[in-house]
Amino acid sequence: MINIAIDGPSGAGKSTIAKELAKRLGIIYLDTGAMYRAIGLKAVRLGFDTLDADGIQSFLDNTDIKVAYIDGVQSIFLDGEDVSVAIREHHISKAASDVSSIPAVRIKLVAMQRKIADTEDMVLDGRDITSYVLPNAKYKFFLTAKAEERASRRFKELTAKGQEVGYDTILADINERDYNDSHRAFAPLTQTADSVFIDSTFMSIDEAIAEIIKYIKE
Ligand code: DC
Image 1 (cartoon, rainbow, N blue to C red):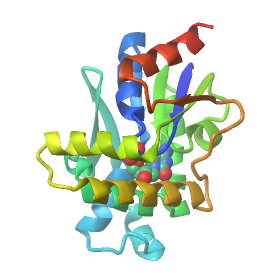
Image 2: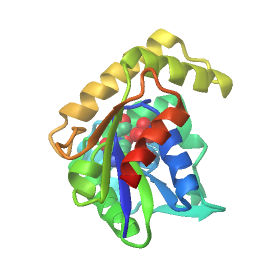
Image 3: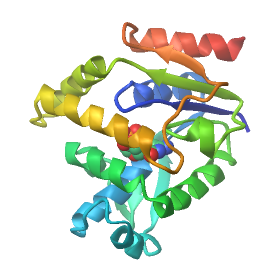
Image 4: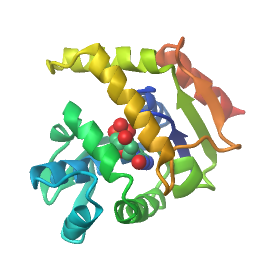
């Protein structure tokens, strides 16, 4: 299988870029963050503190996460319910980051991701794909951008969707998630030595995709 792994911090444009890249290459895109978001959503709905490892673990075995593709577009199902839209709420980002620090959550989702990645060629994005999920992926990229630029992109995206969140709140949340995602003990966000580093601060989506395709062609 040919796997293209893209890691990087929140809001670096990974999902937009990975989705478009997959489309151009005619392969599927696995958004691994959506899986952590689904667990975060369930924790919030059940009223758990999202950092309460014992509480989260208590429902993990009875939690069914499924990824499905309809016309090449990923949908995510939580216990049979399509939660693709619900997981995009702003407060679920923090919940996802919190639950992702719990080893049992990662063990469950990483096993699923490896299994899915073994079925066909795909682009995957996340935090630990290049370092932990698929260290032997054929192509590896680390995509980042300055925090202020990422916050401003997220602000535009959420405002366009009608969600009311201030830029300063988003920037603070991004900094907090960057810290949490790169400091957790188990499989933190990190740039591996064999990943191609791309800073998209001053790049358009198209330019970043062109950069990735250039490396793949080489
Ligand atoms: O990519 P995203 O913002 O949708 O991810 C939500 C959270 O999930 C993120 O803060 C960290 C976690 N995550 C992770 O730990 N490992 C991944 N492979 C993907 C996401």
